[in-house]
Amino acid sequence: MRIVQIPLLRDNYGYLLVCEKTNKASIVDPSEGEPVWRTVQEEGVELVAILNTHHHRDHTGGNEYLLQHKPDLKVFGAKVDEHRIPGITHRVMEGDDVEVGEEGGTVLFIPGHTIGHIGFVFPGMLFSGDALFAGGCGRVFEGTAEQMTSSLGKLRDLSGDTLVYCGHEYTEKNLQFALTVEPGNEDIRQRLEAVQALRSRDEFTVPSRLDDELATNPFLRCESDEIKYGMAERFPGIETDPVSVFAKVRELKDAY
Ligand code: ZN
Ligand code: FE
Image 1 (cartoon, protein in one colour):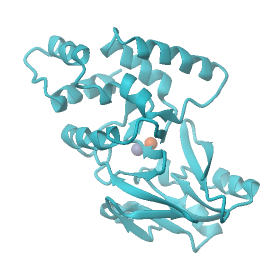
Image 2 (spheres, rainbow, N blue to C red):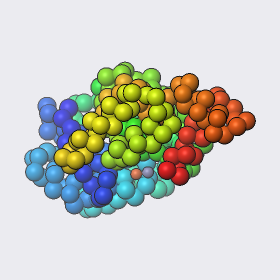
Image 3 (tube, rainbow, N blue to C red):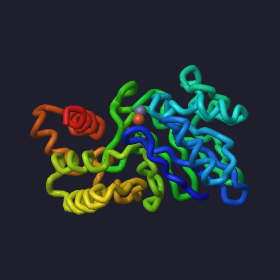
């Protein structure tokens, strides 16, 4: 499967997934329609499906436009969000299959950012939407810290060499924040430098490898002593179980 990464809006990414055997393609999170449709033409592929990770407009804003140009598109979205995914045709849940031509993937239910957030897993790749970012995670808008912790726990269990394709280019700011909660983590320092070099040349910092996330992403590291004791020091009296630590780190990030 070939991935065409499409920068959309200010800092969103859409991903065109192309099955090279059949030339069929699916688009993950079309924030807007026109640039996605243009890419489909340029690539000379047949768009057959939209895969939406969640209902936010910056992930579904292009659904209608694409459906106008290709009314028989399949639109995959979470069953619990069927009322707010424009044009939904395939209501999916944890473990359901999605296909891109002859390439198969599965749905992971990873709520927290929204109550119906899903991810798509293909061999060696995760499309994580706004659940997991490079160096960070999404704001907990609708779910709870507990839900988000268990969603991130599912992602943490994927193979370390999985490439993480997330919904936004937020990596630099995420890693700057990460350093404030884990200043002794040398891996974060090195990654931030590499990311700043990429950004200074206007290059993408996404996808990232899951094992780099495990080493540097504070939201996957709420069991690290430095983060745990750091939070206990800043917020005297808090519990230091992973959910409570996550909630505090998230709170600090929301205000960062
Ligand atoms: Zn979102
Ligand atoms: Fe978003």
